[in-house]
Image (cartoon, rainbow, N blue to C red; front, side):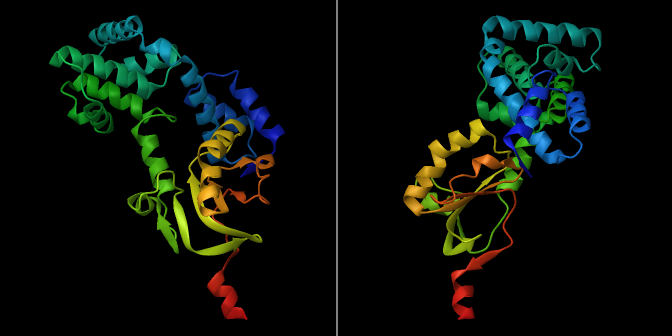
Length: 272
């Protein structure tokens, strides 16, 4: 779904006055019933991630980590069944999955007398049954399933969307195997025309294309692809601000779905 800049600003302004909780997400859907729920969820997630990045450092000081860990221990001592970590994350406006990571890492550090590896932490977050403490495993599970912006469940959804298969394409991993560094998700073995524009590559984004993220992508990825492979297509599966689709003549198209009006070179030649 494409939104005008004014429509996007109205949604972003609303999100600036509510806490990043599932209740706020329901309010967002009620406030903007005509907008796609998946688009609203993506905008909600991106605005939340911007907030988390701004406040990330204060939650990772030694003092903050110890405070969160002690509050967790005191909380489960009183009532192990209560969602202690989830409530703590909501109280301090921090992502539940990230709060779970902090406390899990602190727990393992105390248990093993060593700093746990990121690989081990990620594995336990994906599968809390690996955590050698049943109460903490349940607390971590509650955080991951109730986090709509961060965590292993969100990562799985994005991975699934970004790895949808297309025909007539060379996938990104194949390009990297050939020595390319910055590569789009797919290079077309046979160029196609979309809405009258020749396309050589496709980049898939499981997100909404807002102004800040799109400008970053242009600088870090899209123009590099354009320089190396020629004009291409970017698909923002959850929509984008329509005013950002302003580089078509230079060779970068934006779409919110896979195009249905593709014309291939082979098809064109067969018609002649």
